[in-house]
Image (cartoon, rainbow, N blue to C red; front, top):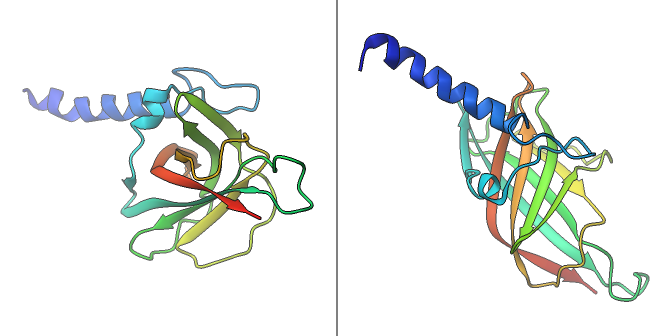
Length: 168
């Protein structure tokens, strides 16, 4: 491999990845969510190294069946946390933007709620999405989050085999 090819090839790969994640490859839906295939979502890493930091995802998913809930319970709620693995502060300007929850061949794609979340440690950022599908409690799903770094680049992180809990 020539030196010029060795220098340019990684840049081409990075550009191609950026185009895919920015939604250029498949467009966006009416909510501005990148239209990614099941294969794209399944390829999202469980841990991501970026700008000298390492990130992973924590999730908690549930359906509310409390007495004041409608018959059959409320739709799925998802709380997710972007966690910097080495307890370093997450860069100012990082944002959790999109959520995909995959249940078999079904996908719930949604932007996160803009509701205020309690501030926590600087190495974590939390977001919530509400009013999801009526998938059964105890089901296992895969969760993918789209988050932007301070430069606006979109990254994906995945947490596989997450349980849907039930509150009574």
